[in-house]
Length: 408
Image (cartoon, rainbow, N blue to C red):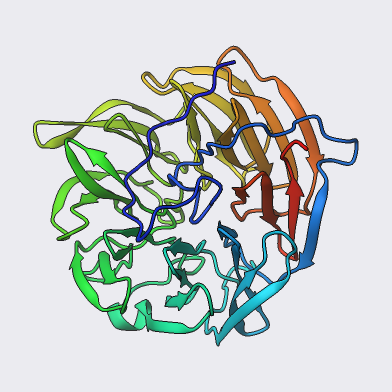
């Protein structure tokens, strides 16, 4: 099977990222794509070798890796903690802690939801109660902080703040969700507000940056729908309403961008839509609620096909699907696979399920073919993993594990 490596999204990080890094939510290009090759899918009976394992606190924020720094964002007691670990050993290098005021109203854990982002010599975290921090990656020293709920009178949403920020041109972009401050750009060095735009309320989706209609834009799926802005000025270039009709719902999956087209997916009856620019607006290529309706996991694309978790976790009916990007036609369905974070890597797809299973299957529109499966974590496992330098870093609600996938 030929290997497909998509063009990188332009993320304008402060310094070039390394091929083995996983510095932000959904990886270097923020779309679940990994350029690593030569990994092993011939696992022993007990699964891939465990390099190390440590106990961690609450939270659904995924780990991120840059060079010899792994950043873990979790909650222990009343503190949200940013910890920097050695990726090879799990040994702690530094930690930064602060008191969190977030309390969950629905019986879930109270840990942070948003995966950190590493850009150059800084790491940025956004806590469940809107605490935004810029830290020095080497030492953990606090560079700046602000609280978005207080500063912008924003809503914490059903399950706390969960948008993982994106860095573009020295700016940290966040779906804050305040009046007149739906999207806000902060100076990555100082935390100073640089611009704000829209009245869009906050969602659980994280933004991307890439080329649409000949322009480099920051693309957000807010609570109201899509908004694409100039990352330098905040000028709105495109909008597209896309949200469920019922209030008790979330927009959570991250937009996908390919060849100037934008794919959005939402559960709760909204479904999926493929958009492309035309005449200064976005037109539908296709849309329906039957192809790929993802509650919170973001699908991945390999070639002309999308692979993702279709259905709702709370309805206990999540299928694994392969869908044609161009038409929305369903190529195959594997019933009740479960919610899963997917990574396209080395000619196939790696899935970390909500049940804590690591699964390798072919990226093929001809049908589901599984290559390997092992339980590496407990349930529920909802944080997105990181794949860096042949090692997978993944966490559930009590532990962080590093497993070796690189061949010897």
